[in-house]
Amino acid sequence: MLRPMREPVVLVTGANGEIGHGLIETLAVEGGARIVALDLVALDSSLASKCHEVVQGSILDRELLHRLVSRYEFRTIHHLAAMLSTRAEFTPGAAHEVNVQGTLNLLELAAVQSEWSDRRVKFLFPSSIAVYGMPSLEVKTSMRRIQEKTWNLPTTMYGCNKAYCEHLGRYYARHYKQLSTQSSSSCGVDFRSIRFPGLISAVTVPSGGTSDFLPEMIHAAAAGKPYACFVRPDTRIPFMAMPDAIRALLLLERADESFLTRRSYNVTSFNPSAEEFRERVMARWPDADITFSVDTKRQAIVDSWPADVNDDGARADWGFRPEYDLDRALNDYLLPGISGRSEPRSVT
Ligand code: SER
Image 1 (cartoon, rainbow, N blue to C red):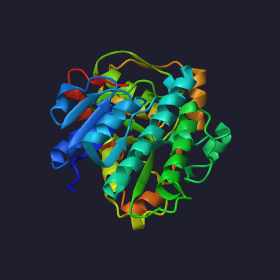
Image 2 (cartoon, rainbow, N blue to C red):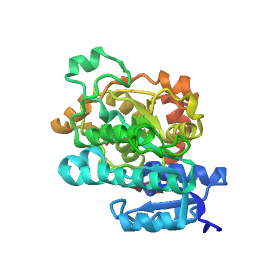
Image 3 (cartoon, protein in one colour):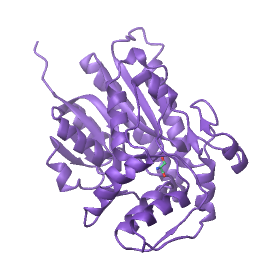
């Protein structure tokens, strides 16, 4: 009997977010990937034309997800949809629903998909430095390059959600239905996750995150708007330019599974203090009005995140190297990219 054919595609959830923008643009330039984009809000028109289909809807809508499975064969899922750390603190229950239940729905979809196609479905998940929780500023300052297995004591709902979803991903990848007599290693969910640092894009401005202070600062300066930075000048966490984040996602997606020694990897690129970054921005826009007005609650969240992370695993297992250190990020990506735009897109 002939099986009805479904089209093989890449599913991108949270497609209209910051990473979604970068990922869809890059996949479109590479060519070859048929992208089904899912987001709560309408996709920017510049992205929509690069997708095979755009679906406006929620990852919590299981009927919608089932309808998608009936039409498409998802070979790879980039599950980017999430409620970020600051916003999540205002509605922790809703954040848990979106970040955990939403991820569970997608993992289930991937598992069902895999059973149908008899092949492993790649599941790429952006985790975060928010999974770490440094107990004090003293410890944060003394422990510089944090390894994946240490300090996994998140203080935010978002960080807890990401940490738990990493466990769910590991479960679906290695232990799913472990008592079934039919378990087979040829199918299942091939979960791979990156603990991203703060990300800076020349194209979009984030909102709802707690690492937003650097991107907000540079985009405000470029737009000639005053900016009051919500953390202390000496605040230091790792960051990365968006093109490196996209490259990392695609490198990990394409890595041979046998080379992977873990399912969640740190990556990082540069970690200026807020003041050091301000000085770089002021060098480009000397009239920029950048001040500091500390929000002690958001400061406490950033203080719980490490000053730097150790990404030796990503470098050894799948050849990750950031192409943009701070100088290159500013000179070759952010400054020309931001200066050339009239209005950056604000995304959630
Ligand atoms: N950028 C995220 C946030 O600030 C952390 O991964 O919520």
